[in-house]
Image 1 (cartoon, helix red, strand yellow):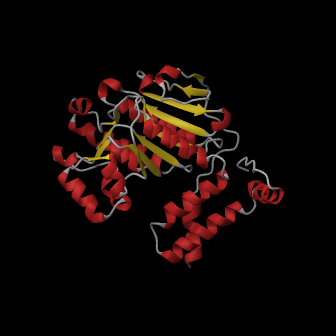
Image 2 (image 1 turned 90 degrees about the vertical axis):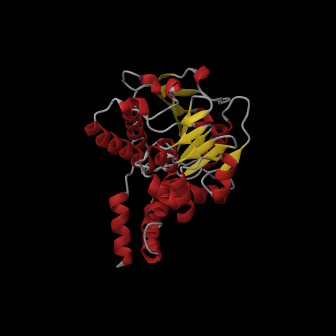
Image 3 (image 1 turned 30 degrees about the vertical axis):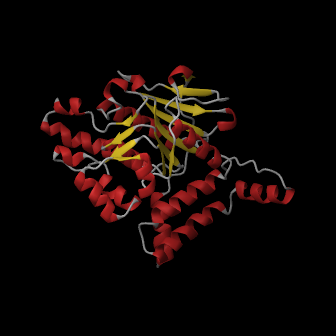
Length: 317
């Protein structure tokens, strides 16, 4: 029974990429606006929009091919989440989801000292009450889609991540911050609650009682405390360029890149689905995911590389 349920959960959740699908047309990336990326050549897609510069999506190549950097770029609004940013990020996530060449994603900021200040309250103040609910639903859908990406996602928090900004980071698999970064779900200050998954994801990342304490008190913690609580996996000293967390996230992405891409996707799916069910069902989910890697060419390549004492060359097949 558990095995059947595990396979049912797997197949209803599995979203394999479409072979051969790429992420559209690209133009050259303006290096001056990007976090420091030594020895990389990169391409970026600018999405059709009134404010297309609000988001820059870079598909790295060369040794870092397969790493996608999603950079939020709203300096005047402290990267606050607007209608336009939600639209652009949904487009970016959809492209990433259907691109079988992507192996990991880094979500970061192109604005020094800020990750994301949460909802754009200036824009929110101009909304009719009837518009607020649909907007929050769309923002929640975006963060859910980000969390459902089949490849590993890393949030690089080099500045303040508040409200919806922290909820976005919580949807990522791994969070890295600078020690000077600040984080908090501060919605209670505005007499509202986190509305894009914060009440659900934060207790799953840290303990339930600690999550309640942080949300009830609208408390903001720095990167060092966030690491102690388990809110972030790594807390690093900030550098003069203000992109230390991004560079650490890039190191992590480079560690992930050489591994079998189908295996990584299946491992993520097994963990995400299994953590929500009892152990017996979770083991059945793992078994169903393992079955997906057995017939792959990558598995045979891994065995051949081990036998021949060389580095494997995985193609995601």
